[in-house]
Image (tube, rainbow, N blue to C red):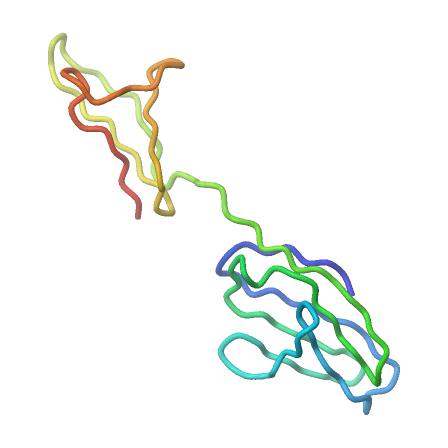
Length: 138
């Protein structure tokens, strides 16, 4: 089996080949047996290919997975990597009249725990000039 990396929300597939299609197959995660069943795990055997699909992965699905066929084991790791924030709509160049008001907006693809606005390399803080700082997510 090969190690697998997935992003949250994706389905992750682990598979291996067996020499005897009639072998007794058992899947384990971190030493605990996995039971076939919706909605989390789908287990299938097609001739010599044994497959485990972990649906809609999240960080707690990370770990070592083991496939045992008649007592012979192979192992692989599933790593669920958190997504980096991405912008659905980036900032645009904007013109304003001197002493006029300007609104800068952006949208993130995922909710952000913290948003930081910068002017050059300096972080902007709410004050007289910067009354409302924020970013909208889809």
